[in-house]
Image (cartoon, rainbow, N blue to C red; front, top):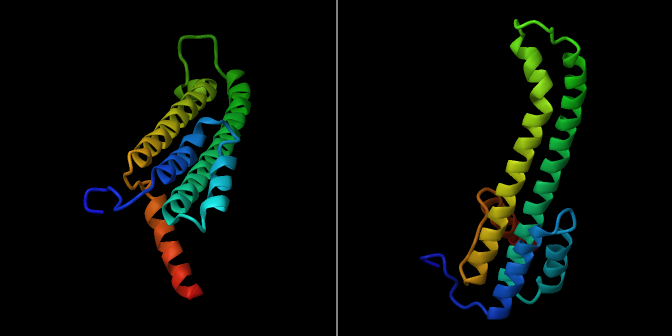
Amino acid sequence: MENGTLPSTDKNDQIMAALAHLAIMLPMMGVVAPIVIWVTQKDKSHYVAFQALQAVIYQLLLFLGYLIGMGLYMCSIFTMAFTGSLVPDSSDLDPFALLGVFSPFIIMGLLMLFGVVYILYGIYASIRVFQGKDFRYAIIGKKLEKYLANNTVAAN
């Protein structure tokens, strides 16, 4: 695996791995496909199982980030309601009060940007594995590989 390509991957393995990553396009339900792929392929192909497990973790982190972001958004709505009444009608505006008024819009914009980047990275992963190249998500891939290696050694 010198240049990131795999020694021998079946085209079906590449398709299954790509579908596991591409499932990120299905909002809130995309995690089901990689779970099904992992369960059905874990004994047949180490490559597909690893890629599907990465996709599961990646998509669960997206969902967790979404929940945290929506919690922050709801808090910012309450902040806006509270600080909106504090903004005076004069031209001497407090910057913290303005931040409180605009914080829901800032948070929603950041959530949308974060979501688009997250989905594009998942699509990139899908393209890479469909081309027969090995793919590891930035932090998830190495940690998952180390975890699986430790558990495989412990099981034997």
